Length: 234
Image (cartoon, rainbow, N blue to C red; front, side, top):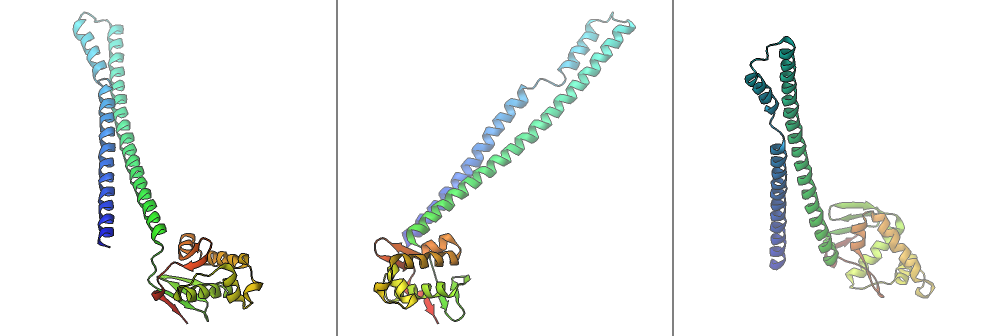
């Protein structure tokens, strides 16, 4: 038991390290990408600097049309710098959004992996039931903190399985059909019992719970995959 707890703890630490490393890697990659994009953009004041040089290097340009042309060029440089500034803002917002999406995708991926591992452990060890209370009169079942209301046929099938589990028996489909219907065993077939098991699983609703609670033993029959000491019937 201690080894299992240690294994789970180490697995949780490994997942936490994986998430942390993934987040750092995503932020680092996008940070480098943002730096390259922003540095590759031209200087917003480069156009204005060229226009200013034209004014300085050509002081003899005093004609009205020439001055007007230079003013238009200066206004164009200002508009160009404003466009580049807006591009930088847009790029920054997009990179932040992309970072958030990638981090969220990484976290969800790790969560799915951990859930898959947990489901694998449950399938290997069976469902952990702390209490199973079967009330035949009210046709209700209490499984841990879950409550089910079953049909009369389903509650009888579950009761037969519970009684067999308390006796450490495994029942075939024919035996289940015989005990529920009251007919003699030679008059019952395996398919009828298998149908009752399927209907019971359907009545329980949760496929994972029902499949793990009612275990099929190859070439032997069906059994409740729980500790017999937790079963209570009335």
